[in-house]
Each structure stands twice: as structure tokens, then as C-alpha cells.
Image (cartoon, rainbow, N blue to C red; front, side, top):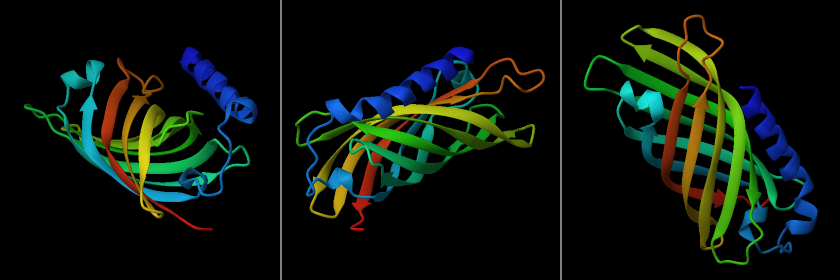
Length: 190
């Protein structure tokens, strides 16, 4: 866990230091530099030890993003709803809610490529134990999107969630989930 915290700390520092020299030139007509609100929908896949307990399914989520003074960097808040069943009796409700930073890669392409990292919490209900609790999560991923007019954007995303359960008594493994999906978001003219 200390390694993961160290890696996220380094990534955060890099996101704050790199934007001044490595960023693409700021243009007022560029849709990335407007606040955004959007939705996503797609497959959710448990991996590693989590995949032995529950099966793949579909998930959906919503997000809000806002600009920072460092133009290739945005901050956002996201939430999602995911339900995992299994061939046996195991079921999992997973509702992550987290904040993240998005970094626009300085590439001159019609498609915008973004890296992201975040942390937060996830409400989880585990069946058949009928136990519900909040667990800390770490999130990382990437997105690419393109404009569909002046207001809307369409994109694809892949997110990785690390669910930390090491603080729980008798916990053996932590959870790992990958989300991928199609997203649609609106550029807000503020």
C-alpha cells in the first residue's frame, strides 16, 4: 500500500509540474478547456482474485469536470453503479464515488487523449453475507474523445479500480475491477 501511495504522490506532482512546458498551446475554441458534465455506459470486469468470486456485467456512471489554472489539467468528480452476479451465491453491489485529475496529453490530434488518476470511496454490498460498507479506492485510467459538434463530445474510457480492504480484520485479498465504456459529455459555456 505504501508503494501505491508513493506512486500516486509522484503522479500528482508530475501533473502539477509538467503542464507549463509540455502542454499544447491553449486555444479558446478547444472544447477540452470548458467545464464538462457527462455519462458513461459499458462493461465492468473484475480481474485477478475478484474474478474468481463474481462475473462480468454492465455498469453506468456520471461525471463532472472543471478546469484548473494549468490548462492541460482538469479536476473531476465521478460516481457509478455496478452490480456483479456469479454462477454461485456471490453477488456484489459496487458504487464508487471519487475525485480525479485528468491530464490532456500534448498531442496535436483531432482526438484528445487524457490520462487520469483519482481516489475516493466505494459503497459495497456483499451477498450472501448481506454486509455493506465503504472501502477506500484508488483509480487510474485513460480516455480519448472527439467533438460531435460544439456542445457534445463522444469518447471511450478504460478505468482501473483498486479496492483496499487491508484495514479489515480477516481480510485476505483486495479487489480489482476494470471499467470500459462509451461516454457522452456536454461542454458547458461558463
